[in-house]
Image (cartoon, rainbow, N blue to C red):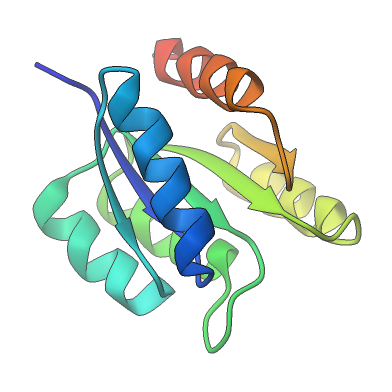
Length: 124
């Protein structure tokens, strides 16, 4: 069975491109474009990995991550950001929840993205 990756980013081009990268590398991957839609889709898709932009309108990726982690404690988190200032927010969230969260800067190379995703998915 393929591992499932749910990509959430308000930039449709980014979300769709990341989804295609995962699909081309053997993952079952879907894209949504808001945190609210991400939570709804996560409930039915049940991803092993949530790949989420940190900064989105209305609800942040970290707010979404907290909800997903509460409902799906085995789901791993890989966050993306174009803003260096988000690093401390992600670190604070990870220390508060005591769950591994990896943060990558946008843009990132597909090889880096896949390597970090695979590393997270190997964590029990």
